[in-house]
Image (cartoon, rainbow, N blue to C red; front, side, top):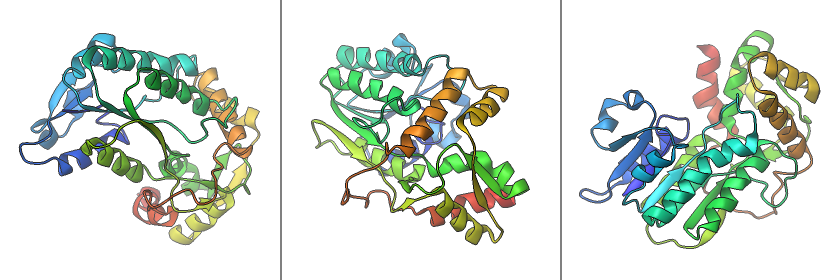
Length: 296
């Protein structure tokens, strides 16, 4: 039994599709946890068992993980959360209780690059509380460690279209990794379908190359055939814009702290760290995802 959370989310949906493509006839069963099962496509509902509820609910998670061998876990972001760490722990605690109650064998979860390095890093630091708690159960665990997602750029499609500009509170020159969610999902699905691994390890997901914000702008300009530039904004101004648009102070400040931590090297990794498991380049992603969004 493979259990998948956030099955209609950006990453969870892709994990579910890949797992369903990979299950053997008469082999693994798939169960999903969904707050709104109506959002699942008909062809998916026909092939999975659905547990209705939220993954921050102890009873829902305990029921969902009954008989589970492997679990995909992702803490859904909530931009109105008043505490980053408590938001993460509200989802991690039910998971860990169910791991112990139900004898779950393996967990694959989405964490972040920077563990052991990042300090005061907002959402990056908060997610490591999940890793610590899950590892304390002794379950076989793979912590998927991506940097920022390429898909985050989709939040700035409006200003790219209207102003030819995207904004971040980080330096334009620091080169960092970036990863497409399709690659995160592919690695997660492979682990869920593989019953041979044991122990607890972190899995860096780096994308094929490190790029600066200015590099991203150049690639977008070439793919979109129009000028795109990066503009750094002060952290306080960035936070104020986010809160004016309904984000909690804690979540907005976390994003500012995260950008500052990345500028300090939170996403730096040793030379030679494998990258073959995340082959999608930013240029390819722009051609296939960003360009259609901008031209829509």
